[in-house]
Length: 153
Image (cartoon, rainbow, N blue to C red):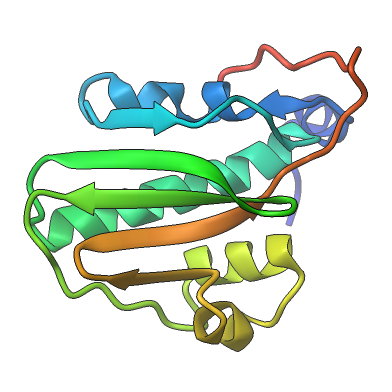
């Protein structure tokens, strides 16, 4: 595989802190118009490429919810345990949403949580129940004076 833009890739791989708020802000805008509730803002990645992985998970979940015809969707994000956020989606109607070990969302969550893909499902790092669909993502602990990236992933 030949990289199409080596300069951009180098910039994407360089250390730059990204905030939760910037990672989910576009979800509340058309065409998505999801009601987003953040418990607080925090750092969620240290590079643009990591933020892209989080972005792919979010869109994977939205595709699953759309296929499940859940109607209007809300997203709540808050800290659930030391060092982890829970991204929890709720639709107007319940849907039976399943996750498989080889899916992109499962693989990305398992890598971020440092568990196997099967363990990510078994230990509920991602899943669905009673109208809720969720995944967990690690919080990035940063220095108080950390510079946050202003890119638009």
